Figure 1 (cartoon, rainbow, N blue to C red):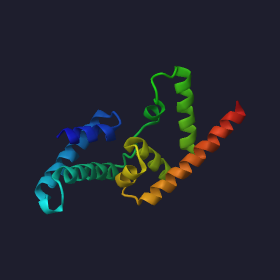
Figure 2 (figure 1 turned 135 degrees about the vertical axis):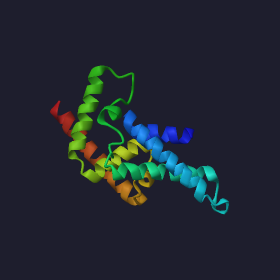
Figure 3 (figure 1 turned 90 degrees about the horizontal axis):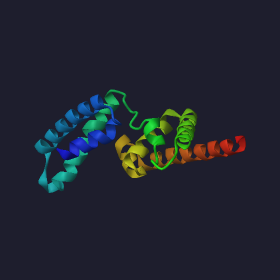
Figure 4 (figure 1 turned 45 degrees about the vertical axis):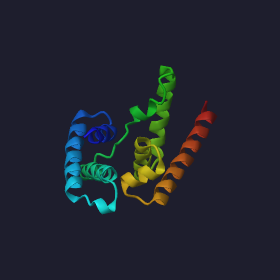
Length: 153
């Protein structure tokens, strides 16, 4: 059950109502994991984690709540930064998001929540290469935007 709560917290982005819905979906996923577990196919914790995650991701897809990470959360990279620096980061992220395609936005949001390309691809049920290519395009656009920002200063 702590797994369900932790995963719901990560995917809800601080929205208590969404978290509650995700917890319920996670418990349903855990119930299905208990019923369908076959000990010959691996360890239960790994199977349960996959079932819980898949239930939550399915819920997010069905309800079109794919904003896993908000611009505010992504901009708060470090508490050591002063307010002006945080505002610049937030402005940069907003400008970057304006340049991205919907697929690239999904890839970036999911990468920010998962922490690595493999997990992000798994969360979106994308092939690894598709995710890697999307993030490469995001990075390229971010570099271009940074270059334009420096020239504009």
